[in-house]
Image 1 (tube, rainbow, N blue to C red):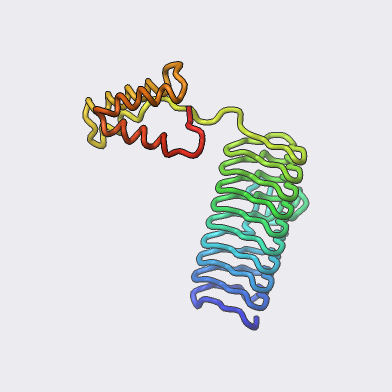
Image 2: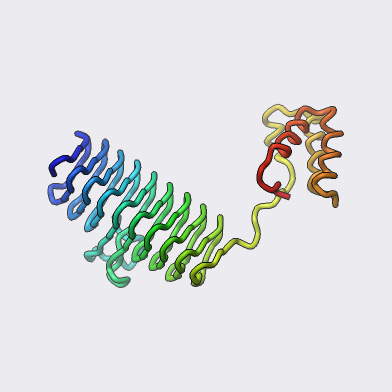
Length: 261
């Protein structure tokens, strides 16, 4: 363990094997049969259970839970494994489980992947190289993900599905079938405006006149047939007597992305 830097509060099982230059942060827990390759950094409060093999030059940020038992009622304590390659970035609160006896016995994550906060990779998943999982992206068990795949935030992949190379899964999309390579998948319907937050405004001290002006602005923008430029003219008229609507209009004018309508 030459060249390693281990915080004195870290708990490391004597049967774990750490390569040269490994750093282990405060209150991290590393269990038996965990192998960690050279120059990998384990952040504070991370938990790594074995059998797990981790390559070199990985970064695990705080509170990641790696190599835990599979979330599968059929699991009966049989020996199952997790294998992680080189150069991955694993962000806060990511969970990656080991495999199951009936599912091949191993979960694999390849090289140079970027797994963002709160993402989950379940038992028996196989993930390739150079993928990006945005926050809260979730794989159920037995999912296969190719190379250069992007999973946008809050996307979910059903068990046993396959995602081909270079596929893009859009924000909030729930995938329950195989996605061929090169495809872009998006949820059919995004969030749509459903009125103003009237009760919340009242709780924060907005009186009836202020709420009424905001309601007028909402109707002008969302409930008529006016195009956006036409609606903004009406908003400007209402804003002459309402600082709240002026702020509403200023927000719209400053936008760089399409307005949710």
